[in-house]
Amino acid sequence: MSRGVAVGLRNLMYAKLISDPTDGSPATYETPKPIVGAITANINPNASNETLFADDGPYETMTTLGQISVELNVADLPFEVQADLFGHSIEGGVLIRRSGDVPPWVALGFKSLKSNGHYRYTWLAKGKFGLPEQSNETKGDSVNFQTPTATGSFVKRDCDDEWERHIDEDYIDYVPSMGENWFISPYGQPADTTPPTLVSVTPADDATGVAVSTTVVWVFDKAMALSTLTNDNFLVLNDDSGASVAGALSVNTARTQVTFTPSVSLAASTTYRAVVTTSVKDASGNNLANPSSTKFTTA
Image 1 (spheres, helix red, strand yellow):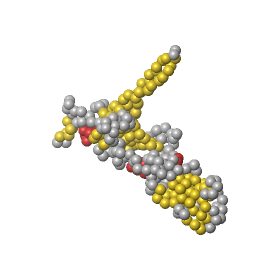
Image 2: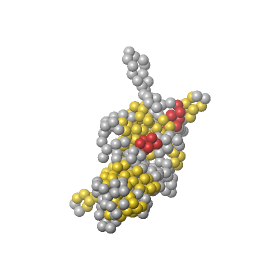
Image 3: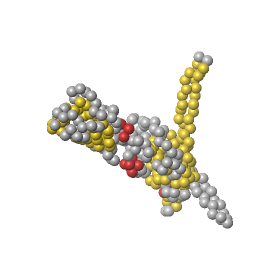
Image 4: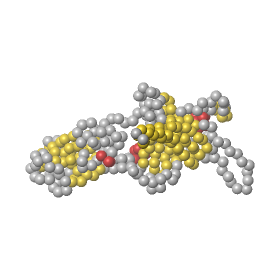
């Protein structure tokens, strides 16, 4: 589990929900827009717990998620943001509120600084906001800021039951591209479901005359999940005896290249087999579709 409690808030964004189908198709959203001047975002999931009693004791328990309450406090809510979040209209530069205004469904995203100096990135999938509180006060001897607070109710999506997702910078499988792209594409677009591809293996399959000091290098077409880049999933074996070669794995910064360095030089005139299992995953959680096995013979 990643450590650190949230101590900051920034990059508050929203995206209008276009569709949330029930036929298994993914939800779609408009391009995310910013809400400048975020102060606080309080999220309170409401869950009910029920226990079935049988045989003179508790027999089964169930937890049901209800609506998720969200309270936003921001420095200001520009007319354009109010029109988007609360269903109002802007006519001739004037914000018009009507009794029949219907707030649209939106997703809400932000990132929060944790006490350990790393960021947590969050998206809430589907919710509606009510009218913000308005507070006015006459000018006094000291400054007293009046900032709007908007309260929303969020629920799970119909298409997949998801209500929230987040990533932590200090999680083992986090890669910088996750944070860089978090607010660019609308939340809830189809996830990456394409399995990773093993682009190359060095030494190449059936290579001969390989130096006994060689390393084995696997290159993938996308960033891989660091938690799966282990000696259990990347092996170099003596092809005759099946014995594992002792060594260490290293990974490049982009997490696309895995290098195995033997603890001692390989035996001369010996055939080895480099294996990658299907337990290896990319950063999106897709497993390698097929295991890889290549062999080479030392000089």
